[in-house]
Image (cartoon, rainbow, N blue to C red; front, side, top):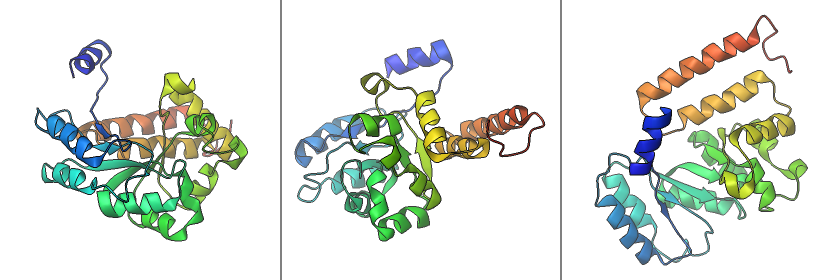
Length: 229
């Protein structure tokens, strides 16, 4: 918290924390750790999360950790379907009431899982560079991002862990641009998704969306809307 405050004072950035459960540990250990987090000042906690892999989701009780957070009006997010299949997405939504899915790229084999995401407007935070680096996909050409967008899934573009995967947010937007043949409006929509799906204050969201709209108007500069450059 002190480090984030210092960064905010230096850069003007805004921030919030999403402490993760670590499912390679037993749920009881995660519950004790999260009790310590939730026992402190919650001002900067915007959600709780779940890392991967999902091997012991089915046998351990992680849902009660999410339920306790919800009782404190703290929403939940979860890794799901990064290396695994669509059943992880369904489980995270039904058992953890996840409001955002990290990755979600394994969802396209299940129309029911896709519909669950689309019908409930649950975003997937897709990390193209990380997915390639970790061999969650065999190649950029095999990445399901174009199909996810075509199916109507709300997608945000993320980096996962920039130093580890030698990427940046700009790099990953470039991948989305290249892999999906997006126009400027498509890239703009991904940016809008990231703001709208965030847990930032509503006043900040509205400010950033207005700034994004203004940038889009300035960038258009008399060109045809949607023209690709």
